[in-house]
Length: 514
Ligand SMILES: *Cc1c(COP(=O)(O)O)cnc(C)c1O
Image (tube, rainbow, N blue to C red; front, side, top):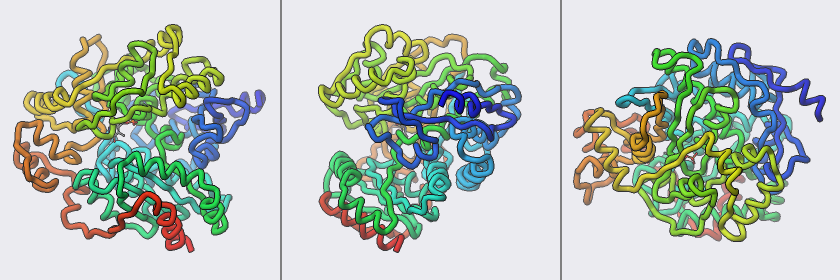
């Protein structure tokens, strides 16, 4: 293995990309079995429950020279060529052109805009108006190319609390060799979120509401992945189940590119000179987005601080202050629902890297989390993590106040998730570095809460009434994919009990694949 590493080590530069490079991946909990990135993408999670990581991350930094001259596609190619080096250059080019072409409403893909002295990195210009598009437009394309010679068809199954389901539907819709089934908790997602899902077109998509909560749906999906007889029946027809969860390396890798893109745009605008450190503030739930920033830093991007912003479910703020990760607390429903998470799965990858690749320690900590609901990393590991990361949080009231303040002062409309991060960023003393706040959703996805934050009474108004009112009030325009929902025919009417979800998946597979 040692020799292969030396030969195949990433030698990516932003100019050339990297045909020769191929990272190997293994579990965060065990480094004995190495897999290629294609295998890691198809499997999603390692067989022992760990997350796939590569020890080659950062071996050879991506050169920054000329970064400011490159567009998004070239940057993405260089980043993915390094992290997913067993895909050919041609495969990556096809994936990138397909994922970040006309389905984003700007050729910059993730444009940067000023907000006071700071910057917003707008990640919501994709087909579902949330940052998950950047990864979920890419993942299906990677999966199809990873499975090319295996002859199986993949059924993606996802339980969603709102945003992920639509992004997965849009990403996998009509991608040959794949199908996607999404379960959402009926009556527990917003009007707009429900319409986004039940109007989804495509011959390979299935959507059902569940009588129950998101957790009920999630628990049942996990059970179905482990259900041997269901999997055997599907396998007989050449169908395998897979997940589009954010722990998949095929979702993480595409997100690294926009950190490089942000840097490139700052240089281009003359806001920084090549080599200057910059800070990123990231609204955080499952820790995928901010971890991608850490990957960028390890790949050579000059990053000062990575600031983890949470809502009232501030497990990560407490963790970064004390070294104790404790999920045993009340789960709070907030106006930034995509960050209502008590177990941030991707943190496991950070623990792996910052412990110097200590699989035994990671295993031990994750075991404690599963059994006792908490773990303590100790002061030495905490200190290492804090060399790169800071954290803070915002309450719902602070989030609303920030939406209003940023609108009144800057005439910039931000969504509640972005507002959490803006609150955290603005509370900090500037340290002389350029600061980029990641903006993860269009404010129009959360029209009701945004309108309320601006001081309007929203009682009795439905999602579209709020959208209209928000346009009138701010003279801004709802993005086309959301405005179009008003006249989109409803295609998916199914509602089922959780114990019917397995049968629903089988029927969908039969309809789509046979
Ligand atoms: C998913 C999501 C987040 C959280 O991102 P993680 O990668 O889970 O930390 C933040 N904002 C929005 C709008 C999201 O959809």
